[in-house]
Length: 365
Image (cartoon, rainbow, N blue to C red; front, side, top):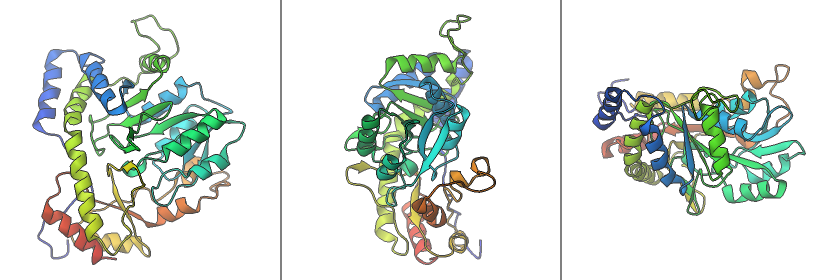
């Protein structure tokens, strides 16, 4: 770090405090370590974030997506509309059930699915839409739900980055047929690894519980073909402790973002849609010009950053068609992939660190 003696500010800093450690040890000592009372309690407590919906805990956010698509009966011959500007899991989950991802463009302000692009992509084979609440900003769920209702489509919300985000007062995970959350360590709250499916449909919730546990509710009484995608009680206990702190962490992320909004002048700061509650999983700016040079200068000033995502899903190797990206016309996706940089916004940032981040950006563009 060229001549700097101040501590490097990482792009993210997961929290594992004494409460989480004590919770894990408590469960380990109990001997009830898989699919026990902690998982049930975590599901019940998480339901308060999603207007009391049924919650089904699984071992990852990707498992949440895959099992939801399986539970809804989607498979070969079905098309599911997804953004290409997202983590690969958004496309992978569709492919893993044998369905076909149809990539559509994003709205430039929110980085989330453009409803007009969704409407234009519906075909007789379309069965569902998978909006991603990217960076913690809710997708335009009111408009997406209207399109889905018109065409009889399922809506599976990928809320992996958006715990407690909302649009017009309705939380993400409480809009669609189902919502899928991740508890990976870099998320706004975590359980080391884990995921949650939220749904208002009791039968869908029961199917999900069967699918995560080899197709059985009672031991050896298998009802359907299932998988092993259970959450451990150790992970659930950690998740419960994190959930207690989520509200405070969210307020701090929002306060940190407000400071950066006010003090960053040399890059395009993230807008927030009317009626949206942004929870700033990432604080993502746009930088025109040489992004690599910008992030290198920022790093020299002791400020870390991340690029999420430099390669849209449709350009990743498994999604190429004869070595090419396929027929997709996604100009806003391509532009975002060239321009986005995510800055530190985690709750434990100090006032001095926030000032260093803003100053670093303003002097590095």
